[in-house]
Amino acid sequence: MSYTPMIMQYLEIKAKYPESILFFRLGDFYEMFFEDAIVASAELEITLTGRDGGKSEKIPMCGIPHHAAENYISKLIQKGYKVAICEQVEDPAVAQGIVKREVVRVITPGTILEGSSLDEKSHNYLGALVLSNNIYGLAVADVSTGLFQCTEFSGSDRFRLLADEIARLRLAELVIPESIASDRLIDELIKENKISKTVLADRYFSEEESIGKLSQFLGDDWRKDLVDYSRAVNASGSLLWYLELTQMNNGCQIKQLEKYITSQYVLIDNASRKNLEITNSLRDGSRWGTLIWVLDRTKTAMGGRLIKNWLEQPLTDPGEINFRLDGVEELFGNIIIRDDLAKNLKHIYDMERLAGKAVFGTANARDLLSLNNSFNELPEIKVIVAKLGASIFQQTGQNIDSLEDISSYLEQAIIHDPPVSVREGQLIKDGFDSEVDRLRKIQREGRQMLADLELEERENSGIKSLKIGYNRIFGYYLEVTKSYINLVPDYFIRKQTLANAERYITPKLKEMEDLILSSEDRLIQLEYNLFVNIREKIACAIERIQNTSKAV
Image (cartoon, rainbow, N blue to C red):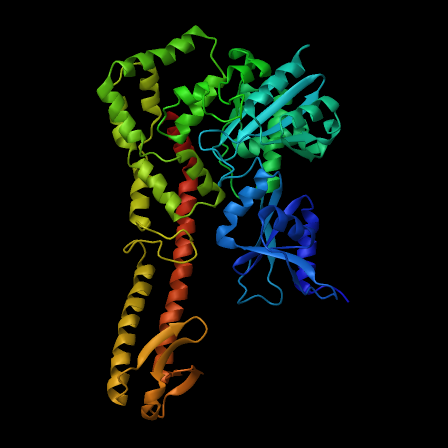
């Protein structure tokens, strides 16, 4: 006796992602089966049940509502697991046989975009490491913000420098080639820093593959800064390969690769970094009582990440140091402008990560509203910054794009208080799309038609308690209490019997139901399609948003 077609489909997909817990979409739930169900039920503290899969014994099974998936995924990621999201990619209503399903994204510790796993004032780094001819190449990216950097380590103290840098970065995940997967020093480094390790085939780290992938993602601008930096190039290309393998080409907001050299900064070894308690306390690893706890009064999540980077990488160039300090001095001496800036910045959301969610197609309408609320502050910030004379502000002001065209578009498109889900309608403003307006008019008129029909049937039949109701199983119905059954007209068709009442339909009510419900279904689908187009337009402006976010 074989498994059912659905379980066979599950097993085929699961075989492609053996290292991930497979979230298998069934209607409004993500279901897990077999070993995944046993692991997930224990880690997430949800009920483990069984399902008939076609064989004599029941298959272990557990599930979660799809709308609550983010929190459950975060819990699994924090525990070091990877999660493969398998969606229904065709409409069950028109599917011939089993509904087609595909994995649309693999979420790993280094590629998570939202949830409690992300600290708003810290980067979530995904790294890639190569070793060739006694030179280490390291690339790091924060997928949620678009940050992408690379460096190399050579010479007799190369491993110590690498170890100190990895300790500073606090990587969430490190991708390495098979050829160094058993390297004792690297393995100990990964374990000591509690990094999630991912091993890829060596071919993803080759020069040819890496150059091709970098050019695909970034064009050719990256080449000029990375001459004679072949190991960093290979690490960077492999990292992009990994993103493509896990994100299924669902977009990527990485648009620029920045080379950095650790000797540009004050070198702080790992032991000193710990003892200095710059960002993490010795006692419990928290921020409380640390240097950043004292100094960080930033108003935005982006500013919080920036000041953390500055503290962890102190400058050595006096010119660069004074470039910053001139700005500090000017704001310190100008309390009015400083307070005005603080008031505006307080209303800025995390533009980098919200824009990243738009690129990856996970942003909802509320995320786009938060982006728009942030955009609304930009013109005033730009005006305030223009009043300052320090070079750092002149440079920053030029990099702030007011994004007024995008803001105006979002203002016209998105309703002011949308639901969390983008699949329930009520997303698009009146006047933005003529077909949405037409379908909403049908719904409004339909409600009035129902009220008129209820009054008409009540008067014609003499049934004073008659009312029109609705549920998802039976649709619209006329409900009559048992005491008025004798007054029910012949053209009423019995639909359902209750303890104290009978429910009926009429040809006229059925006609109204078809009109109202079909328009509702079309409206919900149309609003979703429009929202996806709106989100894609925001994604197309990602470089403008990123540059402005950095300036803010």
